[in-house]
Image (tube, rainbow, N blue to C red; front, side):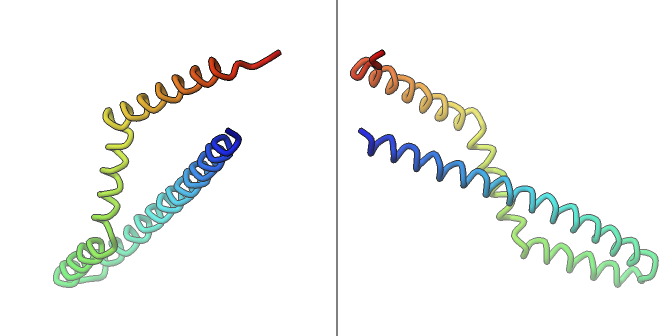
Length: 116
């Protein structure tokens, strides 16, 4: 049974590392988003002060195109997947998993009671 414990520990470690990677990437996305918004604000301010209506229209069209190409749809899909994971259905799955693990631990303890 040590192998199963080792596998559990290994799986938990992998999960913990993945969660830490996700947290780090999420922070990077937040930082990058703030940077993009700040720079866009500066560009927009300069453009509206110094450009013609046609130039602003072209800029706006190019900006929308580049946002579409940059993966905004991918981020929206990720957000939707995340909502599903932490929504009612995802929480039900986590609850079921927790109940299963509790039953497993109870069975384990009945079969191999701790001596002492």
